[in-house]
Amino acid sequence: MSDPIVVTRFAPSPSGELHLGNVRTALFNALWARHHGGRFLLRIEDSDAARSQETHVAALVADLHWLGLSWDEQPLRQSQRYERYNQLLGELLASNSAYPCFCTTEQLEAGRRAQLAAGLPPRYSGTCRHLSAEQRATRLAAGEPATVRFAVPQQGSVQFDDLVHGPRNVPVTELGDFVLRRADGSPAFFFCNAVDDADSGVTHALRGDDHLSNTPRQVLILQALGRTPPRYGHLALLTGPDGSPLSKRHGAASLRQLREEGFVPAAVTNLLFRLGHSSTEAALLGADAMARAFGPAHLQRAPAQFDPAQLLHWQREALTALTAEQAAVWMGPQLPADLPDSQRDAFVAAVLPNVLRPHEAAFWVQVAFGEAPEADADAQAAIATAPAGLFAAAAAAAALHPQDFKAIADAAKAATGAKGPALFKPLRAALTGRLQGPELGPLLRAFAADVARQRLQRFT
Image (tube, rainbow, N blue to C red; front, side, top):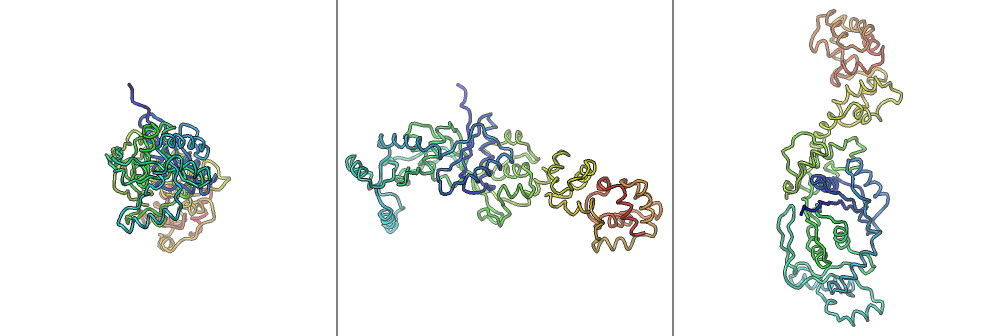
């Protein structure tokens, strides 16, 4: 028999923006499915109506599309599956794998305090587990509020082979009977999550380490329902360079903010691919190459450190790989709306190697298409020390060859004998007001016809 199709999923709660940690989870699940030619699913875990917002759903869908991630079926919505959850809860109740619990919050808290005082881990004591069927029916008929708890086996352990952490063996005594449905009728997260995985045919579920404690419970739920649990893999958290949990102070913005700042998708995916996932691939990778190189065996157990400098490194690599058309679109919002295509293309080609985000091009837009920039102190010093006749010769050449910097520099060199920094610094200073910046030859091709002559003529 052939191996089953690999099915993975990303299951965010629409309660906020996507950040790098959950974006990495989405990427890894998508890559593992693509690695096997399988299916990648998106599920919206919106069972918590108080925290879920449609605006967040729309935003996370837009973020994932921008990143280049696509899914293979219509996204599942937990809020539309309550009938299914109640059906399966009924099956668990009928098989005595679950039972109604009438303990109040006060009673549960008192039991918790008593266990802690005795040096025991706080676990549900099982009070309502021992009620008879008649007692349960009577109390339910009287309208007593009740949760539904899973009846954890009294002995043994839960075993599963984690894709990251390896074989796990959790004694059932560590679990306690846990809540499947709250008293208000809403299902618990790990119950919905497990049922949805089973119903969708999910075979592998990569998720954060914070879900590791849920896994034994979910394995028990699915076994009680006669379903096969997926292979779980729990990813180590992302941290800042100081080892603390990743936050905005480390420069880790939401995906929306990174997009608005001008980071390109390939920069983000190439960074995330290497955060907690070892790879010998040092070059910028496209989606197909990433999928081929990805595997849970390369996932690291230790927390992965986010370094903003690495994001900038991959941004540079990704910008270098852009086509001329893609680069023009990326820088487009900074450019004059009525700019001729030839000037636009020349400007983008000249400036792209000098910027990492579109807003950094704003100064050079002014240099190329605005009034002559005021020279800074270093540029003024270079202009003041220029050999006599340099600007006159350069201006005359610019009148004949307005966008040919080599012709302009050659004329100035022939007239003065200047070469090297003594030649190029004054010319750059007069043309741009700065001594550093884009290569002058390509930049002058973006200038309007008489701009170079006018700027050089000022210093004759």
